[in-house]
Picture (cartoon, rainbow, N blue to C red):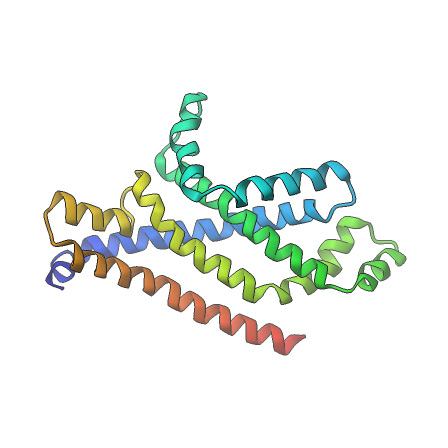
Length: 216
């Protein structure tokens, strides 16, 4: 494991870059996923259709194809930005489809009487959803949402293969390919880095789940 010790600054930089990708991906996919979930349960047919089409297309498309589209398809359409932004956008769009379905299952678990009671006191669909249904739904979706979030953290490694430089995966590729280090110890160091992201995240989600269970 001398390669990890000798290049600890590179591993640390890659780790921090991967953490930032995971944080931005988490924030973006949660926001977009909840928005798409509201489309899925909306009484407006066009919004429901848009939400269903989004989930059907994105969820059944491999992440690598989504990344290919962003990295090579959008520049052909005249849309250019950094590979970091392309990769992050692809990760958010891909993950939000799974977040949407987790949130939708939580919404469906809330008793219909809750929404009816909200409407009976004069709340519209948006107010009923955001003030009554979603707060209850989010308590039930912590376990499935946690699995989606952990999967997204691991999927973030794929971005390194598409030119998003500086993350843990691309650091490992640089050390093994360009600098000639043996791949096994290099990628053991990369794996340890990702475990340092996913294990604390899983523990934090367990704490949140226990707190929510107590509050119910």
